[in-house]
Length: 176
Ligand code: ZN
Image (cartoon, rainbow, N blue to C red; front, side, top):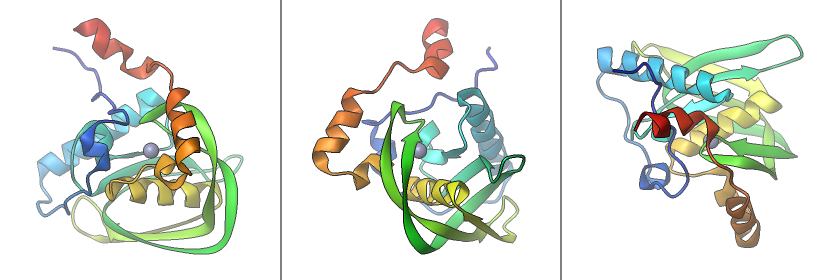
C-alpha cells in the first residue's frame, strides 16, 4: 500500500485526447475523484488539473490558482461550460501533461465557467488574467484539447521535443 497520489498522464495517452463524459452520479466516487485530483495537483505544484490528466474520462476539473500577489482561488467544477470575453492576451502557458516546456498562447482576458459542484449544486466561477487562462486551459482538457493543440504544427513539435522527465511521477516509477 502507498499513499501516492494518482499518476499524471502525459501527452500521447489517448485519454487526454478524448472528450469527457458528463458526470451523472453525484456520489462518494465523485468526491473521492476530486480529492485525488487535489492530491495530484499539490504534488505536481500545478494551478489546475482536469480528470483526464489522472486517466478519468469525466467532466471535472480542480484549480488552485493565484488571482493576485496575495490571493488565490481554489475549487472544483463538474460539467462546466465556459464563456470568454475581452482581448486576446498572449502569455506563456504550460501543462502538467506536457511537462517541462512553456509556449506563448493567446487567451481571452476574462472567463466565466458555469457548472455544478460535487453535490450537483449550481456554481459559477469568474476569473481574469492568469486565472481566466487557467479556466480556459482546464475546460479545454475536458474537450480532449491540450494547449499545444492550439499551436502551429511546427511549434507543437518543438514543445514536444522539449519535454522533460516527469519528476512528480518518479515515485511511481521507483515503487514499481
Ligand atoms: Zn493542462
